[in-house]
Length: 377
Picture (cartoon, rainbow, N blue to C red):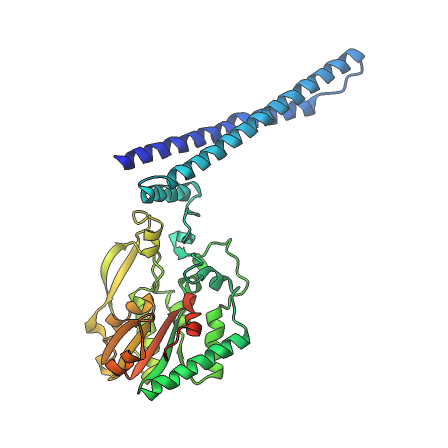
């Protein structure tokens, strides 16, 4: 019942705004234009009486113009008041989440599906959703290319990673860095035009190149593979921050090629549909799962996997939520796969699981973690 009342109130507010706008478009503006046209066609008269009549008429028109301007200002103030009232009302609702959802839906409709009211979700082209929060990484700055590291900073991080590589080697494990691009970097064509880029080279692009050029660290950065595949396959969710299972497959094969030189072909494997009409984490964040739910969850068919190339290596993958999606596919290509969150990892995990490879996975927006999270503690 509460939701119906809220919806009715919002409909009335929107109707009021629409009527006022139509009144402005149909009545006020044409009237102004007609008055201006009438003033333009008046001709000069030579008699004193006609001159005074004209002066009176001009004074009258001036007064009417002032009154119209006052009325227009009142209407604009009214619309501002309504807008503020709507926002205040939404913020104060006991069912605040429902209010936020309605507010997002209204802003999307009014803007012609080019904007939604959200502090964390950016509406891109063709209903692609992107993550815009700046306090959980900063995907937008990554995309704009405004947060590049200095050469000195890259050198410092490289040396720190090399020290950690040495510590892991002393415990019998090889370290591999798996660096994953943000969704914005792979699907840049769906970003809004008003988000301008200073550079198409992102911080991760430059840092990955730097490590591959100046260090002996094993770096896997499958951005080119993910971009190349998207002409045929969708590799990230439209409504979620993460890659989908097709994207995961591409990442696992890039990782496997780096480790033992073999990989499976995307063209030869098959994916089944696990779920249709999937609404991802971004749709949930803006409370619009009933609007943005056109994703598909895939599952790799085991029967299509090339079993001849399965590695005997044991993997321990540490990382963020992107790595949580990897074991289902990685286990089909490696003898054993374990995952641990980067915040929970300790060297005791290496001693306990005795992996051959420690994979440190890091998505682009969390690149700073390579700097200040220590694996050798």
